[in-house]
Length: 246
Image (cartoon, rainbow, N blue to C red):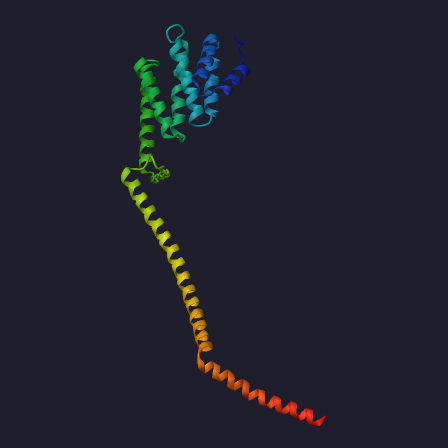
């Protein structure tokens, strides 16, 4: 175990964290160097005042609790020395802003000290009064503060197996209906296109039939013959004139 010095002590206080292992290791080291208890408590008081609110200050209280309880029977000087500075410590904690979680944790510590008679009755009574007032103050502030409604949790997408049977049946029926609508739409378009093409073909067929009837009719032949006779005669006359000129 390392030797004691003010620099080593300050370094150990700086490295202290809220884990039970860190608190217990430093507590054992402090009890081992109990002959320096006055310097240790004085340094503890100074470092607690410089520590950040909530977690770090609460950690220093947990350390004092561990040292005081584990050394009370064999080395009661530690609990007595911590008792001399506890009232100023609680007066300091009462005027700074702490969250409700830290306030409740300190309240539990005060109750434990009172049940186990860690400090003298007068000190215990002063700590209880100070912290009862602090607890009521924080509780009132927490009650008056407007609470924002919590955001609803994001809805999870249900897979097919997670859905109720009735919901799955409704989805299946809807899918069938949509498939039918798509099928009928495609079929209707095909029918529409076919009918339009049929109409065009029918027009063409009708026109061809009329032309064929016209060709086969006698009127067509008469018209054709008249046309031929009309234009063939002038042609013969012109040929006769040409031959006479020769």
